[in-house]
Length: 124
Image 1 (cartoon, rainbow, N blue to C red):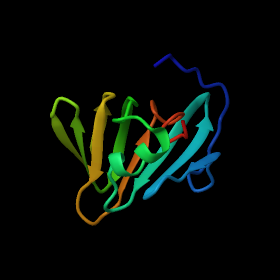
Image 2: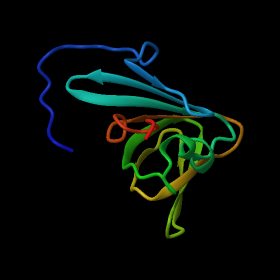
Image 3: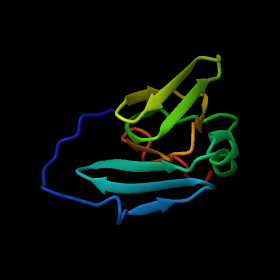
Image 4: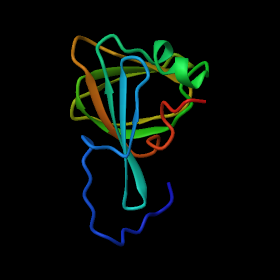
């Protein structure tokens, strides 16, 4: 990720985002601030990438790099090689391309991301 130099004081709310993306069971709220794009991801209980976002981007697995932190819920991620990890509230996470993911339990997953924010869940 290239270095960003912040030159102005700004504040934006994810509750009034610059862009909203809404695949099934998915809310992606995007803000552009300080020369960077950030996103809040909210995935409903029962959400699974291969059943929701895949319908919009039309790839066999998620091809985004992810760098973020989880503020609510639990998300399990499985790489194409079978490696799995579970992200819980309070965790920071890094996920390479080539994965599926799903919400565990009955609580929505909420994550804030930097790297994939500009492109995640955008129509192909």
